[in-house]
Image 1 (cartoon, rainbow, N blue to C red):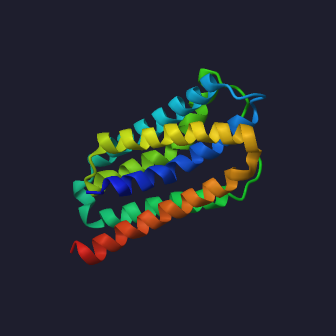
Image 2: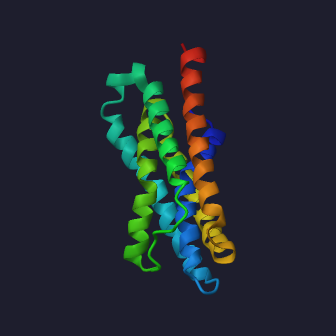
Length: 187
């Protein structure tokens, strides 16, 4: 079972896609609007919280059958997500539409949380308490997304690339940690 610190670190890594999208949302604001900042945080936090549960439930149906490979699956999923985030960090532009309506935020919320579903799959193999982990990931994303909108509004696109790159590194590092623990310490 993963610790609160490990789940928090994974949550921060997962939140970096939402952070980057939030920065882009902040770019579209002419002035800081607290209600829009909270809307983005709630939407992105909600989807980041719900997707690991969906992945966990999906994977739980076959977790026992591939238990001997669970650490490799977690490592590969987290590394794949991390590498993709690092690749995305090279893109300088924001391809986010300016709307703060339910449909726009929902589509972006789902798009930025697909990675969280894959993490939920790895959580099933690691016997993580999924509901508390998902709530923690959702809260972290809520806070980081609100910060992203605010920073995007103040500073522009400056932090988008660094956030995605850092998120990728964090997820790869957590995948390596899981692999090392299972190969060398939990035989």
